[in-house]
Length: 149
Image 1 (cartoon, helix red, strand yellow):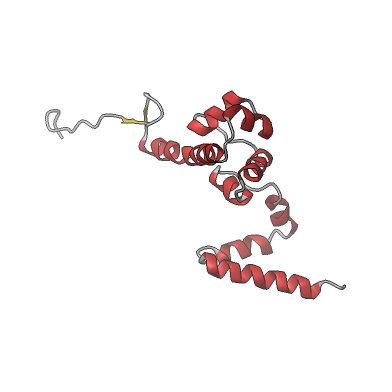
Image 2 (image 1 turned 120 degrees about the vertical axis):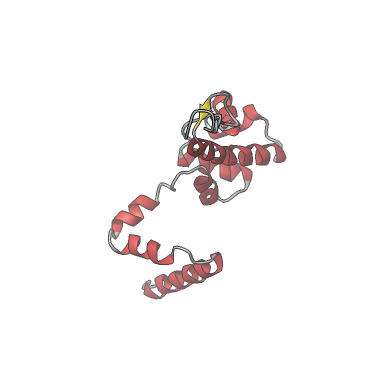
């Protein structure tokens, strides 16, 4: 390609920064604010001020504002997200996943059976929510049948 025929592609601009960034970074950046936006929308719908909600969660109002705006490198800890979920009346597991975290109890569960648990997770990957619910119900039934009462 000669110099004149070369196409110039300006750097992709992140919607949250005036700094050029790669397309991959833009996609990653665009995904982060979903958690913060969701929290802000639910917080305001529940009537919590930024300051009051931050106080109840145990973070500074400045930090919460940055979370809501997608300006933090790392989301709140799973226990703080759990508290947010309780205050907002939302599923803690969904909020934790939305923030890109893993519930604190899952690593121990997986490590308790290091071959079976990862194999189970791989086996159920791609199932519909309805199929997963059936498996969950079946597992609860199996656990109950195994309980000596």
